[in-house]
Image (cartoon, rainbow, N blue to C red):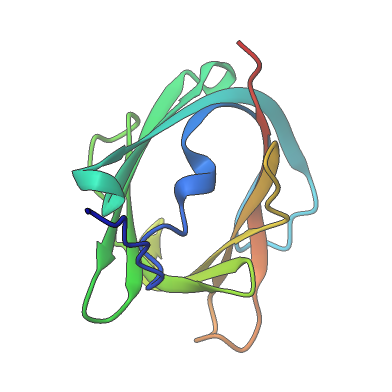
Length: 161
């Protein structure tokens, strides 16, 4: 008799995101400039697992910005952490990844990057996760993590076929 073994090491943490979503974006108009103006626009997202869920691919479409993006997420079995890579249609380049894990239903991921040539620390958070909705947000720190400026908030609502 074959038994199904459920592995609970974190590799299933992004399973909630599989499928089609409507996304309400809220994007800070200018980052790192004490700006309080936000751009708001709608988009869509399609996420599917690869390699049995050890990785997943998210295809995002943002027509109002005339851009698309792809998030590629990989699970490190030994470290029990996720790495998230982003490619934007604006430049076609794969950005520096953020790394982290889910704890108590919240995913927190850190990384380093450049913002218009300025070095930044990045935090990316997945929270407010339900069967039909989720939120992700991105913040930058220009002072080595002393303060953080949230610059992008995405509210996901499951698309109904």
